Length: 562
Image (cartoon, rainbow, N blue to C red; front, top):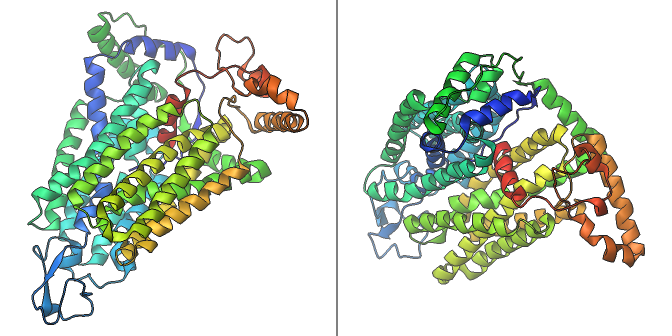
């Protein structure tokens, strides 16, 4: 599950500390690899609980037992119960066990919606735990363990209401896993490997989603309760192993004043990987890093107190709702395709891989057109799913996969775009608010999917319409590719004023366009003698190109905040 970070960091940076940490980690060896795999597997189990309702809450197939009163086109809600029967055991899903086949879409969509509500609330209340004395490692272990315990307890639910309450708690407990995994991965390797280890988390999350069809197929003749057991027991075992073998972030240990533990860890890594342990114990003052709820509200006041920032904030939040609805809704709606639900989930999960690869090819493309094109393409494919209907099933499945691919690509670029829109002083708060809006939109997605079982226009139709309409919010937002990232709100305002002047000059004097168009591509050249703040305020024609991996790094940073 993509999780939100509402942590605002206040820190005093001591270069000697970072230099020492970089020296301690050195190259990426087998020890770091094992640690990264262990940490990333928390996302494997998080993904399973996020999408498990695809199978536990599905509508089972049925057949007629009385051909006089029933036929294949009958509505089972309008014929006697004795004239039809489920194809499998009645306890296969919550729908068949609790006789919810004729219940409202609100009732059948409530469990998954409760999960998203739990994620939304948990992201507010639990996001700062990893920055407190609890730490990154313990937060991951605690979240994964508690999520697994409640996933086992859910098998004792006796009705849809108790079941939904458990789903809420599971969502609440799992809300901090994604963020903590990314943070701990980034803090346990040297700078040059941060993007690579971010792929570990992404791969494990996708792998967890792909594992569900196998588990569900193995359990196809048994109760839905066993699916929760099969996914929870390994997660509990993982939590125990992680507690024993996963080490804490040395950077976090230093911020907590635990110098000796951090140095012992770094010396051990340095000795095993680099053949030396000549690190010097740090006697300098520790980096003071803390999560401040007051700083969060201060940043929010800045965002909503300036007209240009408010405009960007509202636009990106609406855009996040639209893209997020398809990004999370399409995997949950695979049961509505009428296709083999086991293969449908596998195909859907595999679609994420080419979508992530496609993002690399968009690195040097403008952000706004990229998001707009893929959002509209996703929306068109969703609408076409409604138009095609169930008559051409293969084409419909292909359109659904194309829609999900486009939404994934748009979402990846969107993560970068929101990071570039806001200055450093409010960037974490801005991306957190956008992420909250994305999850808020998904609260309604299960109800739409449930209603879509009777009429596709309520699921795929609404998905397509929402993502296409939300893409028009880009019209009021500036292009950010190649522009310097500012640190303060004042710098951002001054840079925007400069850009507006240059744009007006370009409109009235085409020569400016010909001579200065190349200037809109900024080169992030660390050898440039001007300071970061100075470059932020320089006219665009004096800028040079960003590093080749700028988009890659910021995708990882964006997921860290969402």
